Image (tube, rainbow, N blue to C red):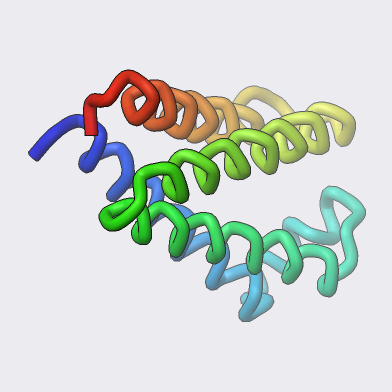
Length: 117
């Protein structure tokens, strides 16, 4: 198993879980949405994008360009998350997951572009 597949699996598992929780509007996600000033509908929309990214990365088994595009979308989405947490005055504990997952997605894309899939 290559590093690309390992990173892809991590991204799929994390964003399928997070996206599913946001779409389902579980209580912890409702609280997070309120904390950052988003409506439940907006948070569900973010969750749907996360789920689509997870599906896109999975589809990368058949077309790695799709996986790379989905991961780039995650990097952009996570940049928004980091910015939102910073604007609300959240500390490193709240910002770090977005930074780490963004780095994972960026390395995943770099590996695909380098032909390491």
